Image (tube, rainbow, N blue to C red; front, side, top):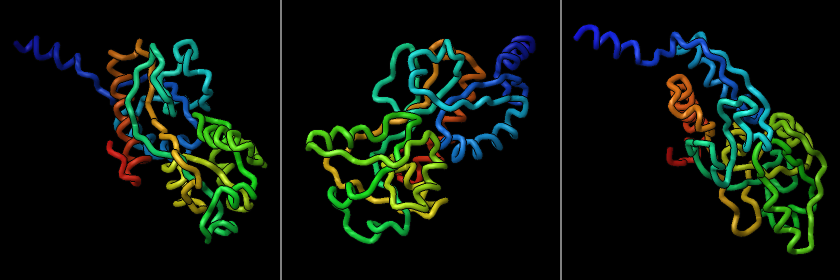
Length: 233
């Protein structure tokens, strides 16, 4: 019986002994806002684990295995096979601007919004093409002043200009805590729903260390990003 118990105990994954390097891909938003919470947890619970963080490229969604990406956190309309995923939360787009923006203290309509130029975030999931499609149907378009793949860079530019930025609500909410920015409702009907997932290739599904890591990540990301909005975990 003692031998059986010993066998079972050695089968249990022990994060404190794990020496694996995990490759994680996401936007710099996740690096700036989420991983400062995740890394202290890893230092305490899995001090030998190493994280290699890469800037997420949307084309990787269909070849995560060949790019050796262990996990990604991204927006996705559906889970492409052969990926597995944990749903992290949902929200809708919002409008972000400087606290000193001319629109900051007035009701915003489509016309007043389009008098200002926009920052476009070129990293991560598709956050704002719905707006361009809607405007195109009306024979209109918005003017882009600055395209950048980095959220932190976009937020700093917004603070000091009259540009506008369309981002998901949870990102707008968190940005307003750290930057001199304001969040407003987008003056357009039928806003799309964004769904966020932690994704991994099915070949990792039964891997004990991978399972432990993705459960830690999913729990931390849900609590960090979505709890301020009251999104069910």
